[in-house]
Length: 446
Image (cartoon, rainbow, N blue to C red; front, side):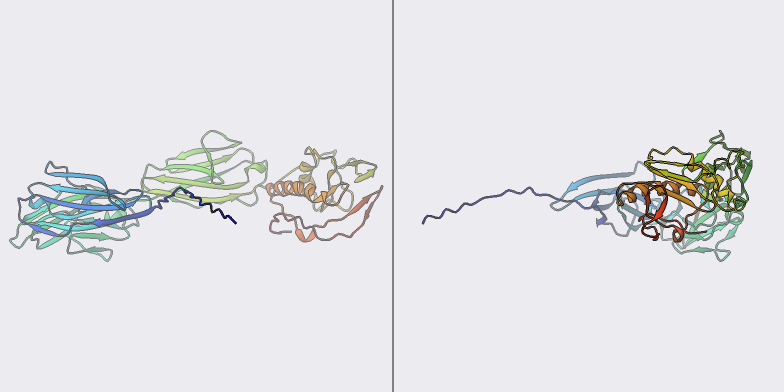
């Protein structure tokens, strides 16, 4: 017996999946205290995916635009990863170059930071600070940009008064000032930072803090008595907030209602702090949630209220004509609108509304709707029982959608399915069990 063995070498392509992950700092710099004169290099090395970007700050501000300062970065590829190398070179370091240096590496996934202090012997020096705006109610954090070493004390003042002067303020030995729950009246204005050494030499600098206030909207509502055909207007008033303020109306979270009329609705600017939404004639399509949105430099605020106009209709002269209900004969079915039984004085509103659906075009000649005083009959004709489910699904979903426009709800406990034989009369074959079409049912209100 001869046995042959076949060896097959298969080559599979290799697939490397690079997962996104936040930056990690691989190399950092440490605190240094130096005499003036030498050059200094501060370096941070980071990795991450996507490749991170590194930003440098000095005392929470930008690195000085000075020819002695040079910032740079480059990408290097190691055996296992790609890294970003970023550095700050300072030539002939001086006392005013001292402070808290920080590098921040960030990508779409996260960030990593590191900070360390550079001290240069010499007299105190306070760098210039940019004016700031802060939103009322938030926390203000200021860092006094002090150079020189050693520093004995760092102080903050406002309006000639040393801080802190209330429970919302706190000054730390490193020159950080924190003001919580900022207030427009008491916290706006000029702030001064001063630094002194043991010899009494003092340096100082100032900035101006502007506290801005978000818009505050006076709540509004739509009356529940609103009815179709009426004229109506609702006013959105901004009671607080720094100008300029932009005000707009939105319906159901998407549609912007501008000054030009849209579907009989328009917004009218009354004052720089108020806008009116005008309905020329309320209609069922105006039903929805209306939001007034106010924006300024401090932020955006909004208020939403629902509006549901009631449906009104007048009884036409021809409505009570042809009061026949349904006649079955052969393969032809007919129906007429009317009141086949009982009194219509109570639920006449439902009859008038259902007329809208009854008059809609129906492409399926085997599906009919019939309105009774307090009920709706859906009549379907088919050659097999399993056809009814698909036939009824489409029309019932259509009915539900229509009912929502008029704030109506179908009661599933009163919804029945009856099997009948089309032999000139309606004979119930299998009783009327509860209808189970596996479709969504609204909350029952009636």
